[in-house]
Image (tube, rainbow, N blue to C red; front, side, top):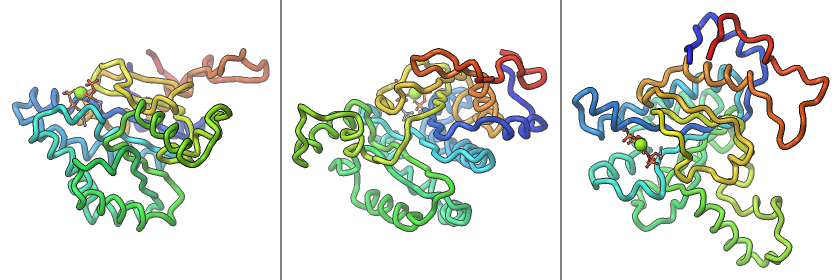
Length: 263
Ligand code: IPE
Ligand code: IPE
Ligand code: MG
């Protein structure tokens, strides 16, 4: 896929922007091995591309941005790697980053099983603090999926609904949604996974029901603002049908691609 150029960013901005973009940041380990570094260095290198995405989302006016930071399955990794991933909030949310996010109207959320006893209480406290200090912001909802599993989220929602007295025989989508980790989180419009793997790895199973997906070979530490814009430009060429047929009045820009755009 051709990476678009900064001179084309304006064209992307002028078209339909996905309201919710989610990213499976994959390939940190391979990136580090190619450089002769430790896998943990690969995780630390995930920071800059995340900031690139936040910058691009703010420029484009995307309202929701969700990152997969740690899966319920990632506990099976070597302890040193789990440790660096557990410390995510420390090395990603530095004081400078937090103040820049606050200044730019970013609200921070965490989804996943953060009550898990394997997560240190200092990490939980940090999450709570970050959520609290940004709770008045509304320009960009930044969601970090941490100790997150899509199947577990659905199962937990069912359990919580039962505990809250819902009649499970009558549960519908709108009732169940109220018991998800973040009930206000809308379906994902665009999912991007890096590193060439083409699977969901138990990410946001409910919210991805009708998502447009893009799998890029780029390794996560090399994901730039240009990649984010390129992903959105690709999304703008898609025709979303949701089980229906295209409306006759609908003029998705399939026939008017960005100059030079080619797959
Ligand atoms: C993704 O990169 C990061 C997390 C799981 C948090 P990986 O560590 O999975 O990198 P690869 O897939 O081994 O290259
Ligand atoms: C998915 O990546 C999890 C995160 C990005 C947090 P993995 O690298 O863990 O996924 P698999 O094991 O290749 O499916
Ligand atoms: Mg991986």
